[in-house]
Every structure is written in structure tokens, then in C-alpha cells.
Image (cartoon, rainbow, N blue to C red; front, side, top):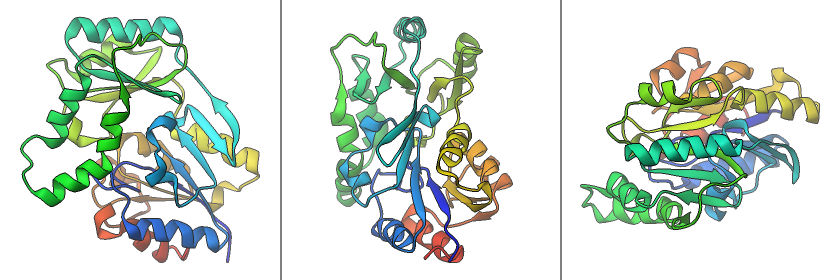
Length: 278
């Protein structure tokens, strides 16, 4: 069997929209690695958001912060941070305009004063089904609980920023930060239509994959990726075989080499099987 390098997005791909890893996805990763393939997470999340339930199956490395951090087998190949003046610019702008946000670092997630209640409103609002609420608590509850508020957010180790739905449009935020920073729509739809992510300009999942496979001597022809969101577009275009999840953005489906089911439809396991990885 030909060894492949597989890159998995997290939200909406390896975990479902309630933040839970389906048993079938966990089993598929374990089986693929047992077959000699390499499996890497390739996510917009920072390390602080990759808790044990996600990592416990075992991976060969992690690309985090939408390409700003690359780790293979415990060896850090890349770690990029915002300049302090850019962090100050983001914080001052969002505070002045009533936008809730959290700054992402490997050491933790540092939020605005109102970010926790706003997140609970966005993620839990209107849901009464006890089973769904229980799964949300298991999947996304640790994420909200992990947010650190009440501390100075002007830090020199920030690698990404996420902001939540507000009256300020994405176009306004892009205009404010365009050039030095890269602004995209959120990869978590529950955050709302005007929510999004800010990363360093020139840093993407595909640039991180290129760095990783060059370092590891992996042929690009042997790469596979699964994703669903805006920040997966360049990744699916870069790898040899790009698979869109069943819930993927239409722009992603348009460039993908194939489409599998959603996370809850065992999309990872099905996709792995169809590609002969398991």
C-alpha cells in the first residue's frame, strides 16, 4: 500500500458542529496510521483549543493557527506571532466597536470581557433538546470554559484572533486590517454571519503543508486533505486529492476532487475507505 500524508481540518471535519469527535472518525485515523499512513491535523485552532478528546487518538503532527504553527512528531518547524502593535490595533478597534473576541496563543485563549456569555448565547441559544445540549457541553463546553478573561490581552505570543457576530460587518473589518493581516469569514457557522478570523498575511494551511512535506521528504503527489470551511480552500487546491465534507462551503465543493458525508454521517471513515486508506 502506498503511504499517504493525510491532512484533516478540525471544526466541521474531524469534529461535528457540536465539537465532538465521532467514533468512526477516531477509528479511521487509528486504522490509517496502522496501515502506515501519516495523519496530521491542519486546523485554524491554536494548540490551546486542541484538548485531549481531539488529540487522544494520536497524530503524526499538527498544523495549527491556520498555518502559523507547524509541529511534526514534537519538533516545531514554524511558530509565527502577531507583532504587538497589531495586537493593540485589533484590541482597540474591537473594544471601541463593541465586538467580542478572543486572542489565540499556544499558552491559552484570552478573551474580551463579554466573550463567554456571548459565546453561550450563540452556541446554546434556543436549543432545548437535552441530548443536543449534553453533546454541546461535551464538545464545545471545554472550549468556552478554557477562555481566560479579566487578564491583559496585549501579549506577544498571539498567533490568531477570532471575533464574534456583531453590528460590524466583515467588509468593515477587512478594510480596517487589510494588508498586514488576513481576515476571513468564520469557520464555525454558529458564531454568526459577521464573525470571522484574523491571521497573519501570507500564512495559510497550504504554505504550512508545503513546509511540512518538504521537511519530511513527502511527495506532494502523496498528499490528501479533508475540509469544509473558507480556510480550507487553499489546502484542498494544494494537495493531490482534496475532499470536501458534506457540509462544506460551495466554493470548497467546486474545487474538491470528491465529496464525502458530514462528520455525523461518518464522512471521514467513508472518505478514507473510498481512497483505499483503510
